[in-house]
Length: 134
Image (cartoon, rainbow, N blue to C red):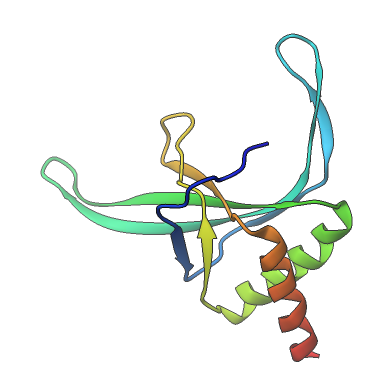
């Protein structure tokens, strides 16, 4: 576990269109040394920017930049309402802004992953919005 001791900057992403949504329960896996490692549940969703590139050889082509946003959950009971809330945002095509970690690219692909830093605040925001919608 890490703790920020000096905060010199903060990154935010404006989410304009949610793609796929993937809820994942907590669990365990075996690492390379055979030790059991526990992980928290989360809800992830993807967003894609598509650019039209003019390639001299091929002509115009679309290139996607895909980012996966992961919202870690302290309890598996938080996963279902968060999943449902994101689906409502997706259906309504609502924009929202969230604080995130620096996006990282783990395998050299076009996919980048980042975490929503304050998942508790995001869940509280979600709960308020869901109450208003009822």
